[in-house]
Image 1 (cartoon, each protein chain N blue to C red):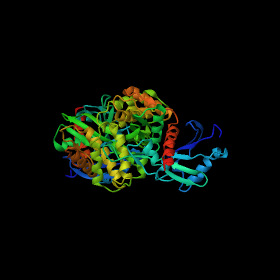
Image 2 (tube, rainbow over the protein chains, first blue to last red; image 1 turned 135 degrees about the vertical axis):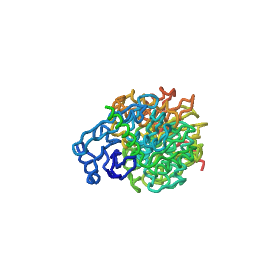
Image 3 (cartoon, one colour; image 1 turned 90 degrees about the vertical axis):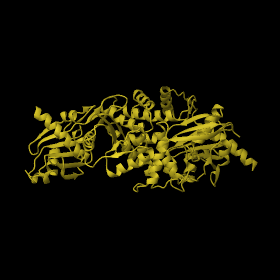
Image 4 (tube, one colour; image 1 turned 30 degrees about the vertical axis):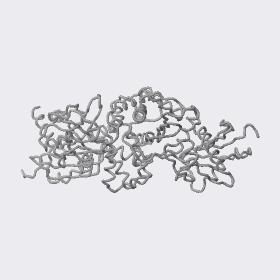
Length: 309
Length: 309
């Protein structure tokens, strides 16, 4: 056995992206393959063919280790639906709910379930893929508790206790940002494209001063009036709007005194850290490739469960 | 002089609509003309021709009283820009800032200014047209103080003291509602078109329970999960979203113990009253045609000022 033989192919397969990792015996990432073929671009019945084609470079090399998939690929809009596991959800509970696809060409493929927070003060709520990234961040830090934020179109804030996700909440920050920027009266004034930390900081500070939840609807209009009266330039306005929404999200979601860990792209992580500095929230950062790290940890549990069968 | 001879033609000319009122000596509305030719549909240089054509039915009858225009027609995107008057703005301050267009065919045309709230805790903010409706509601009720809400794409909440608008705030409620409903992940689940008071009430109650401003970004996502888990039907979801946003607006804007007056269409007025019942805010309603009533009152002041010249 070559020292570079992979023991797992881990695939983080989301709505708009595909990221595969070839993983060695001790969890080291040996290689990666990325593609824009996210779940929303794939017709029913085409998943196996596409996956075979995307993984061809590795299979040519003769390797055929088990494959794990996480993310929206396991949703009703994906390949096969892997029913949600309920909170509290740790590695064990999640690995136990992995479902298996038998593929003639690819062998055994595990599909990681999403996590469901049942109806209550802040539910129902759901995640798919983020649970795996949280497990990866936990594995990397050696911690079993903490707050985690996965910023994006639908930002997730998850609380972990005793190695298990005990609660979480989704904030429609990125999705709302794009809709408000492009499809309201703000679209006429806004010029997007350039980062501007002054505009962003002004938005975060505005978020900090809001009192009631509905004040956010008023602050949105300030994006317009600050532009109309030349307090901010057209290029600063989208940054103000971004700061306002990200600031409001952090202000609402961060627990007083806790240092949440950001799991995200460098760009988004930088924005959250910048907003956190203004709001007095000290973010920690997670390593890249938390999805691969989480899948490695889930794989260990999955193998244990199956050898016990 | 016929007892039906108009003394004023009052035009409420907004972004998407045109409403003209023929007004008699004691402020009675003698006739009205409506058109969908709002400001955004008119090219520069075409306003006079269009107004002449729209008012033709009345001019055929031989009447040529002075004309007053209020609304976005007086903005930079309108016919002529009537510079904002600053708060506190009453009938006198506003009438004194009316600017005049001399038209060969139509005679003298007054353009009512908008109102500006200078930068401060909740400004800068602007209104154009709503000030005239507030003056109309004041004239109709005989009051000189109170809170007024003009719901819509950009809801305005105005506070009046001593007959003057002393402060106000815009909430992007209707604009945000449409963008979020049609241009986010919510669009996939939502079926718009039917009123549903249970769905609306659920949204208002959800708004009532929000703590921090950013919680609104989480509650938006609940529109999705409540649909995913069949807690609300596809037809109820847009009503939930509407209740959530209108509820958040009222909860943030209404002053404890005050009974704000709604100035709006019957449909929107009904929604605000319904939300108010849940939130413990007792709305009063204004008569129809507050714009015409406000213009009549402004006209009296304008005439006084001009005869004093």
